[in-house]
Image (cartoon, rainbow, N blue to C red; front, top):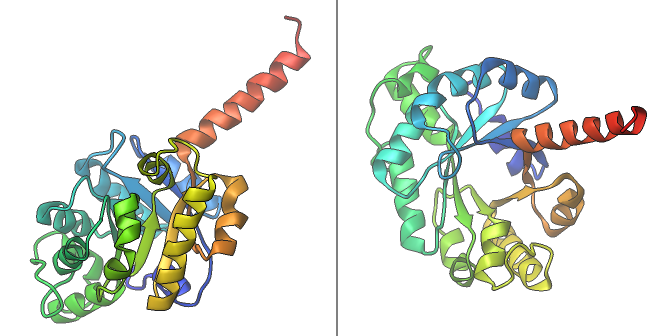
Length: 257
């Protein structure tokens, strides 16, 4: 995929639907998600059991199915940024960003010279095989998204500085960690949390950035009205759990106890 349709949609202020994958990723799962209308995948290496060795095939298959892959790295280190993008993913998400300096490192490590300092190595060029190395570098720098997570009170306090870093494409809110940081663990609907979310959205709009969030299906409109456009709605395990729970409840209503 030589064109990042998610990045373009966000530039046009369009809402984008995605979901999370935190466990083993198989081709039938990816085909199912694509058939259901998923536009982007939140592939998580910070939590869950997914490792980078699981992701190369997953990212390539997702690409062929028309889904943009965004990899959340475990920590802000060069090798995590570079290796994640070497899978062919079109986005990298950095957790726990709280300062401008951290955001600057994320951009530097995600972009090739002259924009950043990312090194070229196999198999990063595979996604750009039809073009020359020079064109591949330019395409990667243009199409790759850098998402920084705003998930603590300190990050919200510093959000203006973080959002002003050239090359940052989106501020991605971590609602659960934010609620913990604000002293309201799990209460993502508290007024304190919503004030923080609104501030992130306001600053992002001033800087021309997109805002993303992890959301349950019934909270999408609330966040959309705040200004969020990049949604990771539930995750595959959540959908399995809710669907099987509903099926089990329906079953028990129809058969003797």
